[in-house]
Image (tube, rainbow, N blue to C red):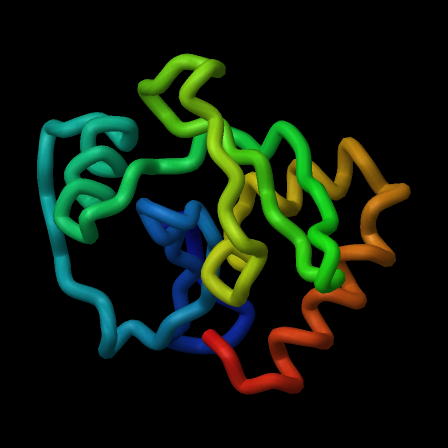
Length: 124
């Protein structure tokens, strides 16, 4: 949990896999007490979802059809295991993408255009 939300009975919570922060109503929260670190919890959550946590986005490329692919560095893997994944709604939620665009504001327009394409097409 990141803290209280702006409205009564709401809280800001961080998704352990995407690391995105969202606001949820208190009714949706369940108490979970553990001695595990955030890193350990993130690994467990990713494993349960069959996913490898994203450490950072280190680059991107535009394909011939105009779509974008993100070059992802995966948590716990070496740089030679970085891989390209299609930019879509799921990867649009990554905190790592926010960090990448802060570091590379010159790419914001390309990502905004790509986001419009996958939103209008109805793809997930």
